Image (cartoon, rainbow, N blue to C red; front, side, top):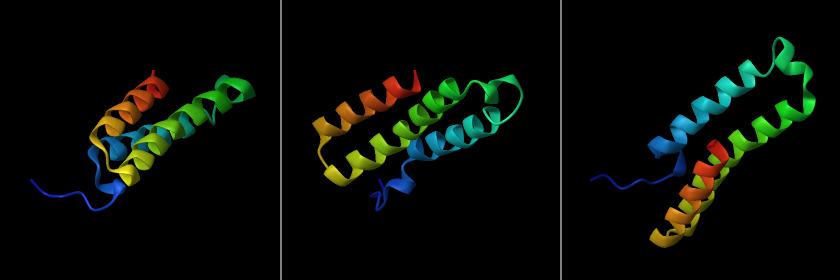
Length: 77
């Protein structure tokens, strides 16, 4: 199994990055973009997913990794 050298190589981070780009695109048009509070909340939640995965990568602990993935999953929900 290959060792991951940087958080950008984690598959879940890559997927979260794609989801974030889709959210920014979807929240920039139509009626959605007029609800500033909702747009802000959804965008911050998508960034939180990326941030939690990246932050845990720097900590390098299995228990902490599971905790941060749970937090990221909550942000996704």
